[in-house]
Each structure stands twice: as C-alpha cells, then as structure tokens.
Length: 113
Length: 116
Image 1 (cartoon, each protein chain N blue to C red):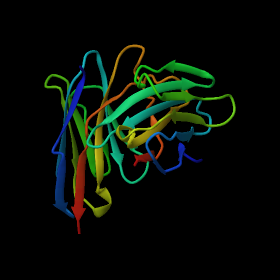
Image 2: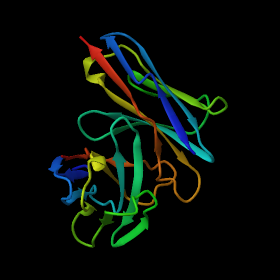
Image 3: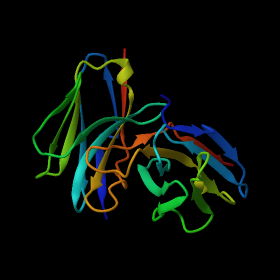
Image 4: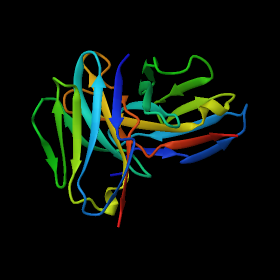
C-alpha cells in the first residue's frame, strides 16, 4: 500500500526561526511529490517536485526531492506568524489515475511572535 | 476569479439523517474530485467526476455515499443515513482538464461534517 509519512507531526517555533519539514514516501510508479499549505481555508499549492536534487524556491520557502532515499524536505526561513498552518505532503503516480494523490497526515506548524 | 467554492462550510447532522455537500469548481474547470479527511488522517481520494459522468469512484464507501456532477449546477456529494464515523472534512478540487503534466489540483476550503 502506498504510504506518505510526514514528520514532525507538530512543531512550535518563534518568529525568525528556520524550520525543516520532512516527508518520506513509499509508492509504486512515483510521478511527483507535492506540498500544500492548509490554513482555515483551501489547501493552497506550494511546490511540485519531480526530479531529484533540483531545489524549488518561492520567497522564504524552498523544497527539494531525493528520489533515491524517497523523501523531500520543505524549508521555511525567517518564519512569520502567517506561516502557521498545516503543511501537507502528497505524492502522485504514473498511470491513468494521477489525480489520486496519497497524502500524509500533515505537519502542524505554529509560529509564535 | 473565484476559486473552488464549497458549501456549507460546516454541517451538523444527527445519526440517520442525510448530508449534502456542494462543490462549484473554478470557472472553466469541468473536472471535479472529492477527498475526505478523517480526524488525525491525511486526505483520501473518494471520487472523480466530469460533467454528467463518474470517472472513478474507487475511493467511495460502498454504501450510503453517492456523488454527481450534473450538466448545470454544482457537484453534490450525498451521504445517506449518516453515522458518527462520517464526521470529517470533505474537500473538493477541480481542474480544467484531466490531471497531467504540471497540472495540479486546486482545492476548495472544505465542508466540515459533524454527526451527533
């Protein structure tokens, strides 16, 4: 069975800290790994990673994929209170059902002022 | 340009009642996907619909759950005779075309069902 495991499950930091969120996966026919940010509204897309070792970056957020070791990390530098959210990791597969994302349980990040 | 709209945002039902959750996809999107997030669990795929067609319902519970996406109007996820285990957040996503390449699912804010 396909599996996505995120760690830690929750994390509390102070504004300005740097955090690293982890996502490991076991899936057949891996296609891509996606990160979403879930606040009290729609999960919003952050990154899609398909190739190992290529960092994706958006402002203070960055992410990288290791297809050999089957994991990805999401880094957030100089955290702000607005970064408080649940960060979701999901994987998609090759084949006819690439809309069937397998999600991890998420990491709840709390950034305190 | 409104995103994926779901309503109601919160719904409370007693055991045995019916729940109807609605999803209006983004403008120009004709593909709709429903996911369920049980407490302490990740989102899980339920069903994929195009207008008037169910493409893949492999994630739907075999009984009491149904989904439709009529030619006009929103997609509806219907849960009959709800039980406490149906309490969850139900998310809808849409896409303009079948997911491929760099397309990603755009999610709505979810409908949170509580069964008393």
